[in-house]
Image (cartoon, rainbow, N blue to C red; front, side, top):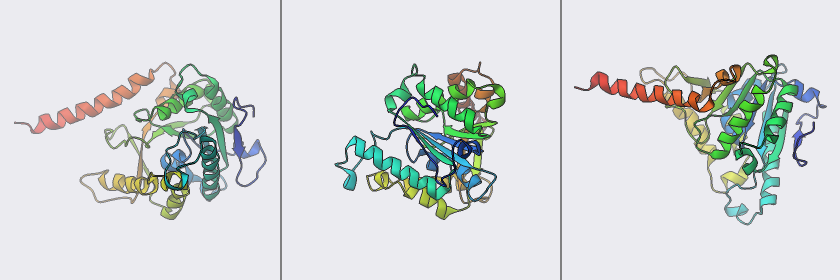
Length: 283
């Protein structure tokens, strides 16, 4: 494949030859940074793990150079950190038995630049070959600019494809903002109760982030358990882990929809729900 960044690469954990390794993809996660996939796209990873008829492909858009670092990694240069994070992501792909792990290797600035079409073109090329049925990316209410940039590039890439080549579903998932605030009609809840050992291993492999100062391993698994418990106020727990997502499928089914307006409508429904709840009981 001819990606724009010369240092981009595709890692195939089981050594399956291209392009067949990608064309077997059924679920795809497209994240900004190394470890985003294991946090937000765990539904797809678990759905495919151990199945010959379902395959997860991961796509990491940025190079990881700007990662925070401390402890063992405090003196690590940007290039050294890039190499470390690529290796960690490859380890996760091995553990999760991904069909492929793609590194587009863009600087964050390129992703946050609305006028830079290169990531859109690379993603479109990849999606056209892989033809995933389900795609997971960042939610549009995330508070990390690079995450929002990636989500917008993903939407633009899918919209550029012929209608029959687009995925059936696009989900925006939790990383740098929970989605428990979504009203029930807007909230997609994935049950991720199973394989807690696998989930822990997938997040735990990113040592440069965890021992470098961010306990993503504890926070991620804790959020999933909390989501499961707090999902329904008047029912006992039906699962031990849940991941919430925003359904972005309408944005790829109808390219005329304004992205900002689509998210704003979710926020307004939440605001109205709060107002209605107070009004019903206010004397």
